[in-house]
Structure formats: C-alpha cells, structure tokens
Image (cartoon, rainbow, N blue to C red; front, top):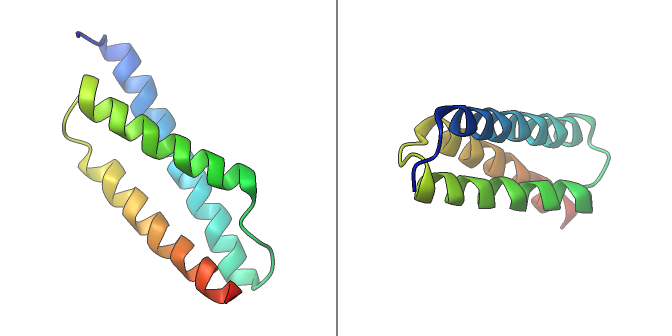
Length: 85
C-alpha cells in the first residue's frame, strides 16, 4: 500500500498535536492538584495509539519522536492515576 506524502504528513502532524494536547492536559492536572482524567481524554489517548499503530504498519516504520513523546505523556498519566489512589 502506497500512502501519499501529504496523508503521511497530516497524520504525523495530527498525532504529534494530539500528544502535545494530552500532555498539557495531564501537566495541568498534576500542577494544580485538581481535576481528573476525563473519558474523552482516555478516548483520545486510545485514538493516538491506534493511529501510531496504523502509521507504523502502512506509512512509515520510524516514529521515534512521536513514540518518545507518547511514552513521556504516559509516564505523566501514570502519576495522575497514582494520585487518585
């Protein structure tokens, strides 16, 4: 399957922007000590992971920066869940 450059570029950019948005959300929760992780944030997190999997399978194998950003976000998210306990 050949995926046009424009499609790959837009998907990559969308993934990056969504990870940045999720990271800001979780940083705000951690900094304020208030708020909870919302169901729509969980849904977006799932969608980002799904998009990365598709991108790796059909577009480009190397997503080092995006995967690194996702790991950093998920480490912060773990802190949010730990605060709830």
